[in-house]
Length: 553
Image 1 (tube, rainbow, N blue to C red):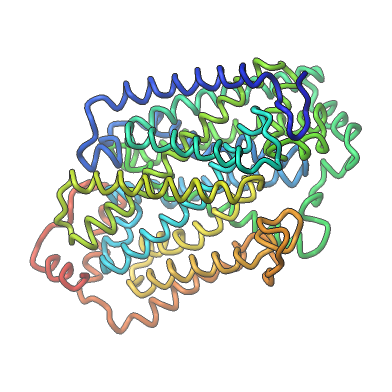
Image 2: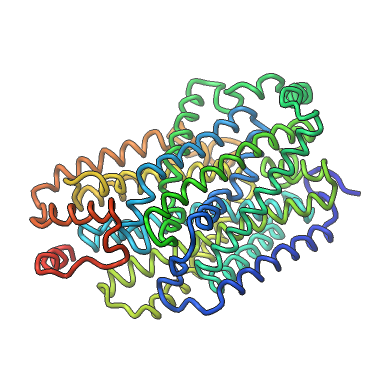
């Protein structure tokens, strides 16, 4: 017998595993087929040879962004908290407009492999790259932890592992991490991108199928669905109004604004998304990639909202929160309710493939940041052998994977949408101010960049560490301890403005040490960012440039 309860399998574990194995095998076929020819050169490993079209890359970006948080976390947030979950989805989508208008094209035209390429183009190389690489590794690790924890929760639900059995859950999470490393080490960016494209298409199809199926139960009448949702839940009309999760007190309303700010500014700050802009041949293709991504992500979030309310009506928040994986189990439980074991297995397998592909992209970003920005540029001063650089990147991927597995075990059971919201806050605090200042403020200096990156990152981390998300409440990461003094669950409202302010203050204070060649290099960067001139070529080694590079180091 199959039951929707914690500690029991949903559907048949054997059938679930069989469908899982089929989908994983399909992704491996794509991985090996597209990675044929090797990726020994740094450009092949980091950017897939920049051979993807705007449509392909836009689909891959959507696949990167439509992670476990989008499919499992957002659906769960809508099912349990109603309109507050809807607002989280809308805020996350709106953030892509910033990427389209201000980031995508100039970033692609200016850099080669990583975000630090842009930041160090006209600033001092070593301090800026060191800071950018550290923040990239941190943000990637936080995002990895959220994804791996979501994968663990999904598998424990389908295999019937009780919430109390932490050992078996830890083994499952470790298995997810091992598969992730295989994706990275075998496929590189090229293979991982094609897996992302496949996964994005499957995810879009499954989301549309579930949404249409849910609406069909109510004669394709959204009002009838929402009325049934109110009738079937003790929260009633509160599910359709803001405030069920964040409106109980004035403080929770502020917290919701903080989460919304992080969701708005986070997408344009995520290093694994920014790295996608380098997989296309030019800046125009990068901009068109974002347009493709916005359409795909927007349509999927509309489907996710319908799926969330359908789960609230057909399964109920109580059954969802009682299941293994808690709120993250809403989509699989709805699939089981609608189509039985087969649909459950298909939806869960697609969600699992989603997580694997996203964590592979994150791992590549983290390893590329260390190998390219720290090893090749800072330690080897630009004289590293490209093949050795790729080997360093692969070794870094293994280390990052091990750390992420440990973090996923600790974070198991947390709502991954909330964890991703925290990651967005850290990313926006550490990256967005320095990126915008570098691209659009001629006076911006190295001191401002270093203060903005380190200050924003440390501020966000400290506030998160002493927030209710970590301790002090029954749903905290450490519920039995209370060392929280920062009242907001998400630090974005404080840490993001602090980062912008530090960048400005650092520029004003550091103006006395201004590089005399800074104005020329900013003009050179501006021309390249706007026109794409000399894309993927290093700066001309004129006498002035050589002197500036000696100063920078």
